Image 1 (tube, one colour):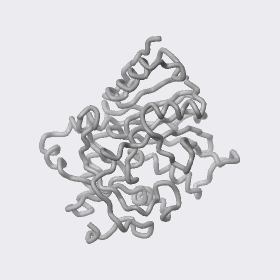
Image 2 (image 1 turned 90 degrees about the horizontal axis):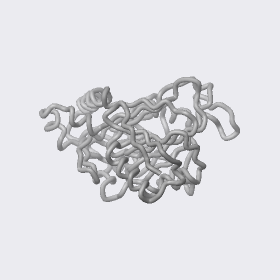
Image 3 (image 1 turned 90 degrees about the vertical axis):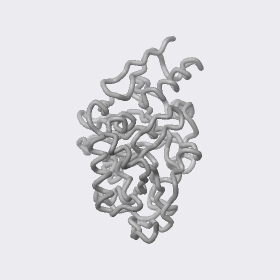
Image 4 (image 1 turned 180 degrees about the horizontal axis):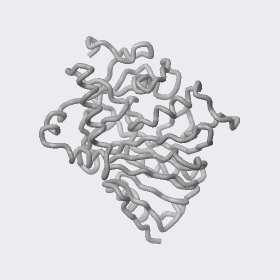
Length: 300
């Protein structure tokens, strides 16, 4: 069996065809891991993996980050457990809407995620795509002055603040990511631990830069994000049931696209944990709380 990697119409990503994931040989898995590092995002169409196969797929990339205790995968869905459409008042619905902003998974946690693997089960008639942006190419496209300006800067990352900015306020410990451990501090420029390539490490969870006023930090982060997420560095994936994608959170941003939330959209998500040596950030704000997600400058 020979796997075929067809580059997408973007600076990132490839479509992988030529076999079923559950039947890949060790040689083919070596190809997949190499392709993951080369392309940063891989599309495997028409796979229809079982939950167990999906988790086994994720384990090929590293340890699984359990989003709920003892549960290696979660449904990313606008349906309640009894199959009804969620209402806007439900916290899970608010999380889905927040995810329409560009982000990297788990940057608000003590250890940021290495990769994510998302599989499509039920998709709406239109909309509901996932869009990806290549932060390696985004960094390369910056002029030399901007690269020098941001070389030694870092930003705090918080799910409290990103959800609040989107209009949704969560309480401490209310759901995954709404923790009490503080907001991790992460460099704006990340060196990939495998490839050595530099990439912008930004997104909606980044919100404050030490040594800079909040207004100036927000303006810089917004400007970088807007400039980064432009063609040819973006790819829009129109899901079909059975598709699975894996992407490298260390150098790729993604966002969910809007759709008619009265239509069901059911995805299954497996998140691969980052290695502590490279994904634990620089430090944390110790007093981040739901009632004060943006601590005073004295907290620095």
